[in-house]
Image (cartoon, rainbow, N blue to C red):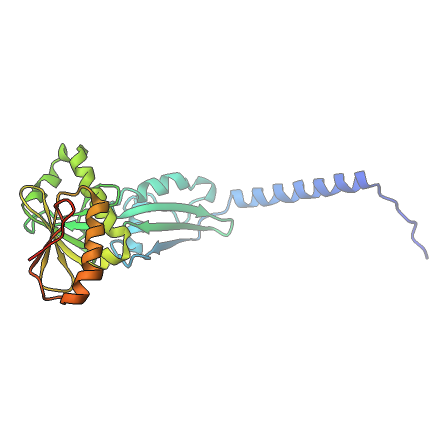
Length: 255
């Protein structure tokens, strides 16, 4: 028995295909409308080897201390922007993005801050300095391996009026310059900012100090430091000097 041949025009085929897609999509949307959150997945980026926060802390922020549970809630009722806002309340969070899928999973990706330096205030109320120039309290959970900054001048860093000045921006630029350079971030262990605001650098290797002066003319001063490290030290040795001074124009003074 032969079945009659049915000819379907291209136009009718396209219409039928579109109708099928619309029906399928409507069905999927209708099903997902009543789906609930099965679990929460937290991904914390530790690319800088900082461990200020953990999954437990993120979950606490997401749920407002368990006052607003997420698991069991309808997916349609999960406000991703609100979750991101809650997690951003943590000063150690640099960025956060939240997602949800039809499988009932809410995923949140968290990027931690990378401090430029730890500012010491005689061991009381120490702060981390961020690349933006913002100061945040240190974490009781974790101590970041970062540049140490001490000295009589650091008391100014806690003054809200000072952190809006051009002088403050010059110090932040200086710290960012060190952080961005792999050589200098490895070479410099600690800084002392003296009462007059001048910077003294203590290198990782060698028993000497570098008198840098104020955080100005950075290109010129770091160029002189490069000359000292590449041309002078190899000839004289790491223990040849007690102090190196690059704060004066066109001079490198070695004592």
